[in-house]
Length: 335
Image (tube, rainbow, N blue to C red; front, top):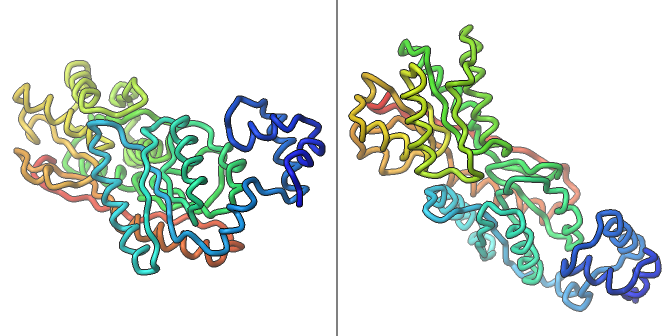
């Protein structure tokens, strides 16, 4: 049986260093971590080998890791995704454990370590910001992984997304058909694929109609996290500093903030400024006026991700797949 000291000898490091790399208990230089992981692969070493022998029995547990902030209505979206996942997993006798990264990559790492200790059979996750190449080290645990809602940076894997870029394109095209030319765009921080694709869809709709993209009409939240307040502040900036006549808001919570500003300042919707938001929930139907929204297929996204993960568990050698689900533009009275 290969022991930890064999790995240390092969990597030319101390056994303590190997332990720190495996358990993440102390910072280890990237080059040293690579030497340790290379040695583990060459020697076919698996940490916690007794526990790992239980893998053949399967835990029938799937992990779900999502990024939810306090007072962030994205939890509506991800809870709908979780419902879709559970719908499929129950049919196959699996249970779901939910955890929250709080949009913090360090918390995300810790939560994955916790999942590893539970011997999960697979993981579905919406990645946070930043580089996710660290996941390739943690996949020494050898369970499949499916990404949802966003594509990670520097990490390959199965992925299920909603086509937010096309949703934004359709919303802006609707505004253009209504005669708007000064169309504002409000978004949370860029750098994750969902936000970036929506901005690309906004720009694409304008350029196809020969309308120059005006950077002053694109407002991006300063903080790392979208919020009601940032939606409010960015709508205020658009109204006060530009001649905007329509606004597309790229996520749910910022839509609420932007709408609050317009209503508080008695700006007539859609006569003075039209507005379309993202993620269609019941509250959007009872506002005055009822809001036009880009609806994401959240339950279908969860069901698709769960099926993809179960397929990966049974057929781990299959090539990675990316599935992109269509969004729907729901027109009400705000646009």
